[in-house]
Structures are given as C-alpha cells and as structure tokens.
Image (cartoon, rainbow, N blue to C red):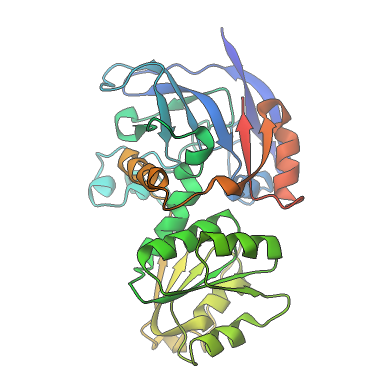
Length: 351
C-alpha cells in the first residue's frame, strides 16, 4: 500500500504530520498530486477546537496541483494537467446547487465545504477530489502556483463579500480587518467600482498592503476611533457597504454602526459563540439595513473567472504569500500562522 504524508487533526491544539494511504479516484472523482497549498484562518479555528472536525481528518482546503488519476466518467481532463480546485466542491446537480447556492450543496449549511471538514483535505501529498467534473479547473499557461494559490478560498471569499454586498459604482465601503480575507475584500471592492474604500486594522504592515490592494483611506484602530473617522469621511452619512472580515462581536457591531440607513453589512467572518445585535445600531430593526453572509463560492467556473482576473493583471495577490514551508515543516507553519508572528499573511506549503 502506497502511503503519503498528511497534516492530521488529532485533538484541540494538536495537528501533526502522519502517514496515510494515498487515495484512489473512484467513479466521478480524481486524485490530485498537491504542488502547493496553504493554511487558512478556518484551519486555526479547527486547531483550537472551535469548529468540530473528526480526529484523524487531513486538514486544508486550498489545493493547487497536478492530476495524478482520473476516475470513471471524468472526461475532458488528462493526467499531468495542472489544476486548481476550489475550497468548496459543489456537486452541481442537487436542488441547492441548481438554485444557485453551490456553497450549501446538499441542502445543509456549508454543505459544499468538504475538504478538511467532512473529507480529507489538501495539506498532504495527494488529494481525492469529489465531483471532479464540477471542480477541476486547468491553470492557464504562464500562471505560477503562487499566483493562483489564493483562488480556492480567500480570493473567492473576499471577492464574494464585495459581490454579496452588491457594491455599486460610486459607493463608499469600509472593510473591518485586513487579514488575507479582508485584503481580498478590499481588492474586490475596488473591482466593483467603489469610489471610497476605507480599510481598518491595527497593524500598519497590513494597512500598507491594503493601500496596494485598493484602499483609499486606512484607519489604525489603535490610534483613531474608526467610527468617528468614518462619519467624518462620509459627512455623517455612513457607508453604503460595510464588510466584516474577522468574525468578532466588536467588528460586527462596528460594521453595523458604520452603515447608513438602508446600508448593507456583508459578513465574511467565522464567529465563535453567541453574536449579539445591539438594538440602537440596528435601529430596532427599522433602519432598512441588509445583513448578508457569504461562504466562499466554489466550483470550476468560479475558479476560471478568478484566474482570469489574475491573468489580466488587475489584481496581484502574490505579495500576500509572506512565508514558505515544506510539508515536513507544517507544524512550524501552524505555530507561526496561528500566533501571527513575523508579519505573516499567508504561507505557501509545498510537499
């Protein structure tokens, strides 16, 4: 039996590198040899025990690799082809997918998120991809692994936050938190035509990157009260769209308070515990506010579109890869990323 190395969830606080059998394709599926993957903030929620995952599960949901095996019924692809697979792997056939909610595939909340959640994920040497015809997307010639590494999750999620917020040309937008997701939301707001983009964070290095991604104004919340400054910039009107990209009570509430009457709060954060709605900020439910949530859009068509954006040069997310590790060093990579040391944004993991 062939084996491979894989980063496995053991228990809260422990992810370790172990040997597991190399997966086989099976009908309708494919096996991808991973060439590059990364660690997501959601993986840290799993590590901390804040999101339930079975012990022994291989973690990771951001795969870039080469097709190693194709199962029966998978046509139009070839072994050796470079591909990206989204973090969300919809079947493309169920009622929920056909209703346009691929991330909720199967009619269950977050049902399309399988890798590192309900099936083994991408922080390994090989990955079994379900519903391969719906999820394998070839990488255009000339694009490197690191250029497309953000497409499976954070680029799709961040852009999705801007899309779900229905940002219009001329809108004023604030994005609270400029981690990887928030930075992609900032870039997405720019592409959607926002005329004033405000980025909020407490780390100057991240605010500097936010400027590169399209922010017009940056606010360091450790030095300036964000809400006071937002109201000054909008002449007391409030923003059209506020994007929450961290998943905390504080940032959720600040987004709500920053909105104009009739504004939209686009929530991208993964929340732990209870989330409270302040009645005054919510205008007791009478402010015509809209609150929308987004789980990373997936599937091959989504990946094709995102790689088109990268290939066009309109967005360059390569600077977000700040650190690189081998799969053998995955535990060191988790330690760095979980503790947010050394200015880390994203790490590239190469088997």
